[in-house]
Image 1 (tube, rainbow over the protein chains, first blue to last red):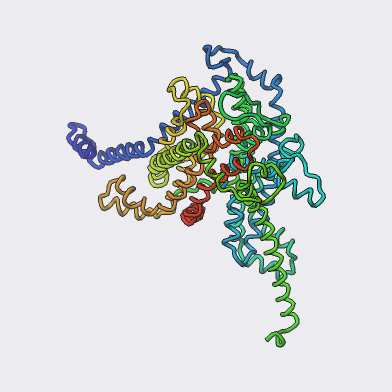
Image 2 (cartoon, each protein chain N blue to C red):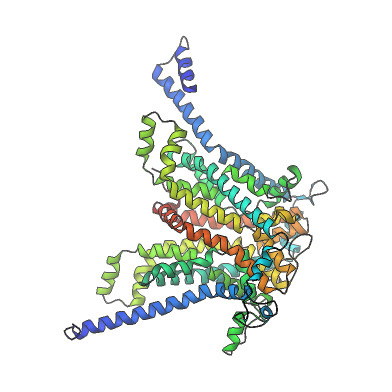
Amino acid sequence: MSTDTLTTKAAAAPAAAPPRGRNTLRARRRRDALRTLAFMSPWLIGFGVFFVYPLVSTVYFSFMRYDGLNPPTWRGTENWVYVFTDFPQLWPALTNTLWLCLVMVGCRVVFGLGIGLLITKIKTGTGVFRTLFYLPYLAPPVAATLAFVFLLNPGTGPVNSLLESVGVPGPAWFTDPAWSKPALTVLAVWGVGDLMVIFMAALLDVPKEQYEAAELDGASAWQRFRYVTLPNISPIVLFAVVTGIIGAMQYYTQPIVASKVASGVMGGSGVTFVPGYPEDSTLTLPQLIYSLGFSQFNYGAACVVALVLLALSMAFTALLMRRRGGLIGSGD
Amino acid sequence: MTSSASPALRRARRTALLQWIAVHALGIAAALFFVLPFVFVVLTSLMSDQQALTRDLTPNTWHFENYLKVFHTDGFLLWWRNSLLYAGLGTVLVVVSSIPVAYALAKFRFRGRHLSLLLVISMMMLPPQVVIIPMYLFWAKQMDLSGTLWPLIIPMAFGDAFAIFLLRQFLLTIPNEYVEAARIDGCGELRTLVRIVLPMAKPGIAAVALFQFFYCWNDYFGPQIYASENSTAWTLSYGLESFKSAHQTDWNLTMAATVMVMAPVILVFFFAQKAFVEGVTLTGVKG
């Protein structure tokens, strides 16, 4: 309807009326643009209101002193200097994140690959095994974390009971700064189902002929894995490592719930809780944003930490996008 | 038959059998690692208050009434309702608002299409905590909506980057010929989408809906930021932790509550497993 009026208007235009064909083309272009705009509109609004605006605003607040009550005042680089030189929790959070990237991500990738290999070799009851291996990944993080604080509680937890029954003294897990991150790693490895699925798909895609050729050449099982399997699945391994690192930088729910529950601090409203128990050993950057912003009401410093987190995730996202050009696809 | 087999063949068969045993033994060991935590949680949830504080692994007497106790705890039903509202409404809104965007990105040609896609992916990779300060100030100070779940639900009416990306990947697998044929027959863009494309995209939509439902159900950070001040707006994921604090020594009740938060997600997975797996595999085809 609007198209018809557009074309007739154009056709009725007097004097230097260009050939009709071009006009309908222009009208069609305009109609197409409007159509695209209409279809894209939910996201365009969302992009502006929930992405561009808050990002710009975060940069703005990082230069302001603001506590939510008094009007914000310009403080230049004060927050930046504070966070990088005087704020005692930034460094523990960064070293914890590094630990998580190396050990937790490493364990998850190795274990996920192992389970993926195992499931491709299992010939009887594959479906049952696959479902059992995948199930923990679905457990809601808060519930899974509570379950593991119970399982690993040093006094009466089943894990330490079992360990002591075979003569191994169990560690204090979530209440010992040296063991809290390993305990979180056990929890993360338990929910390795997502990696298992992508490794399984990748392993089934390795061409059979390459294994047959290697076998004819007398390659051992390890050599077949090292020279046939690994080169074929290396893009997926890289994908798992980089997405794991991005996830580790955003690691939030499990450490904060574990430290709250293990320290016995009341959850819920009206109680200040300083995350990181025990001794800052489970601190991560998002928890700093939370405690700076929502228990110390130092919004400026919280925004500085948020921008540090943004810079780190962007660096690794760029790495992921460059190495996996196929992620986007051509669309043609 | 065995007697006629050559020694080499017999050896090969024996190796195959040994390998079968080794692989399945490993498989059972791994299955124990994945399943035992669930088993201990369920067993503890059925113990008496006193026994839950001991090292016992199995209940002496079975206390199924623990589940009733949890169910009748103050707030538990309300948190349940809030979780369903957040997850249900959030899922519907995300699916409805993301489909047209994904369709435009997959099937329309326009300037800035590639850029839009790159921006969608950047949004997908943005940690939600990065923009939480201005977002909170916006919802709490300007919209006066803190203490409710609306700051979490309303943004979902404007598309979700992950859902858009996944649906777009899925729509790419639908041949353009269908869309073009509909256009030639004089079918409008919206009708083409609803009548022709959507029925073919059901598995992809189902997968996106499931992911979104799980995301909302599991979300802890969002309710913590916006709803913590008002316990009538808490979700199960958020309330569960305070349940533990209120029942500091009642591991049996805490574990019963834990089971009740896990169960719906796992049930949904079992009912929708086919759609889930189908969606994920199909999405991965042209990933």
